[in-house]
Length: 200
Image 1: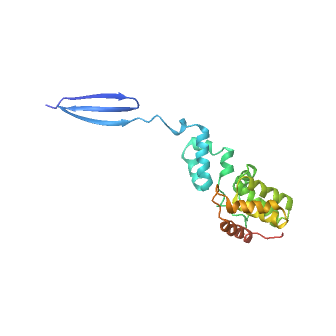
Image 2: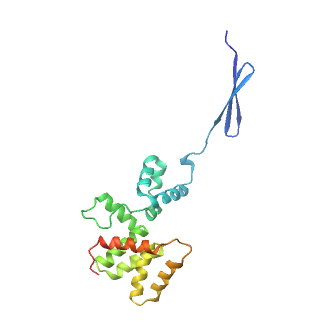
Image 3: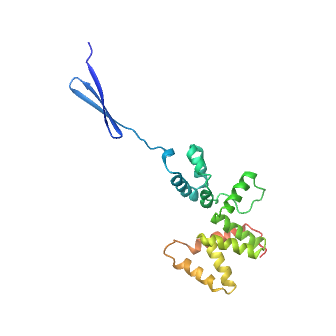
């Protein structure tokens, strides 16, 4: 002869409580029912989150897009390509890059990725000796707040006697809104120049 059991469910808002009676004892189990899924989040919020991930790691955002349909769709947004880190891709390709890599890097440049603009400016100015085009790319990167582009552009202007160059370099040294390290900029620029055949 078994002990009679009575089970009832008490529901309150988004939680449910299962209560089972064993004689006079009550055993309660709290079950949370979440109504939020990734699909229920606004698209612009997903894009913003993925853009932050993309700015620090190309690999992480690539893995995120493989995890679900919502992330895959969000990573197609132009804003992702403006922010995504391309540090894993070399400045100079000793062998022709694949069509997929070339398409990705071209899209980053066309969408105004600051690192892409900076790299293209360096190549145009120092390697291809297209002064006007190189300065234009560097200027666009400066407008997006790229530190190395600001340093190079400032130095080029300063060397030509333009006061704006000195203003840019002073801004880098004394800016409180951005934590810029001039020595780090010099080191990165030196590394980039060592990878290129410099004509200018």
